[in-house]
Length: 364
Image (cartoon, rainbow, N blue to C red; front, side, top):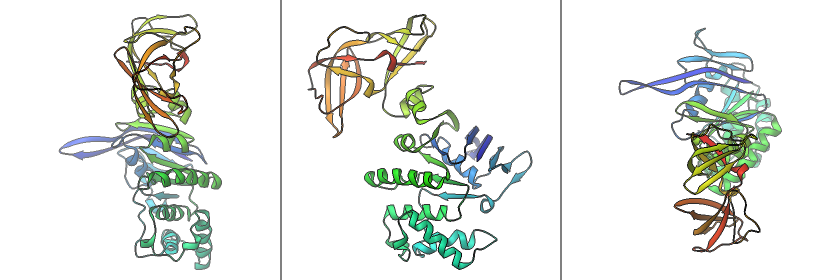
């Protein structure tokens, strides 16, 4: 459905050329929910705007549904209104002087040279408003809508032309936490129901992990890792991805030995740590990354096991569905996520287990 080949976009600032997008290539399949994830300034919105035609890349090629809509070699750039896309902006961009119906009908009335008959427009608008549960508010003024309702109107407007692909630029960032959680589920279910291809820009790791079929993590204008949410979370390629996507603990160390079956033993400030599926050369400097929920904390253990250390509980925070616990092993502070029923107290000594299969070795 969407292919980007070696997209480069630069901006001139203070007499220098800055790369906003640097040699980005990706493919999005039909019906896929594909997220561009990264911190502010990483190039994800600029990439989205290049797909839409709101920015013209300096280099590269873009194909939508098999059609070349941008090629610098061919000197071809299809205008925005002729690309078969719908777009939802971060600010929603709802017309304040129009009601809900007219906002959604706008691209049907003015977005194409072949204007639909008004009767067909009315039918299409009510159809998409029903999909987003806004048909009962069709005549309401845009100025009388809540943030969640405005978000639904913006989505209905993007879907009204039945585009091949919908581009969404952080559409949930202006909503409160509870509504944002509800809209994540609602938006993902709606797009799956319609079979619509979506490219979604976000800096929110939870949004990307819960909504996406695949994720491209971006930094400094480049895609540093692409994969399913499970791959991005469980097998990050470097320290940036590991630290950006969810909470994680890092331990610096040096590979002491490696076993024939592919395990490594790493010297760290807390002691020797065995890491499964990490066969690296002896003496190599590495980082061990382990997720907070992978660490097991207990007051007593039946027998000694690899990667088991005595630790002291430093801080306990009750989060409702979990406990956020800081423990200290030697001079190293680690963050642990525990069940509320497994309560521990600040100051007490416990046993901490770092399972070898959960210790990810990342070359320094």
